[in-house]
Length: 84
Image (tube, rainbow, N blue to C red; front, side, top):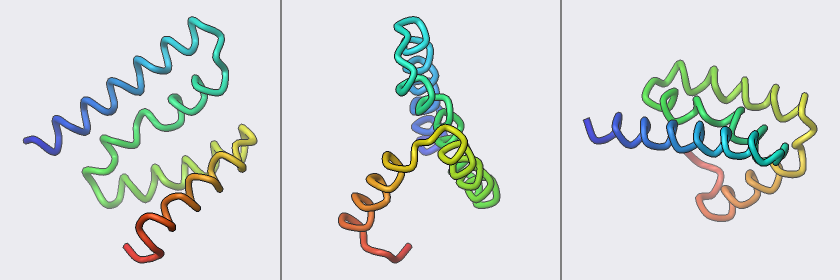
């Protein structure tokens, strides 16, 4: 129950960020929130999380967010290493 609720709260928060970014003409934040808002719910299922990861890669490529994505990968590896 708690895991699902936390995923929902993250989902809704990203949707709210997306809406505010749209209203404020903040394109970068809008696109980041737009490509990430479904991720929290997808993490509840192994198949969904893999599918959402592939969607994220496609969105990063189509929106030209390579530098942002590479920086997040680097931060993640520094913090958690290469293992799962």
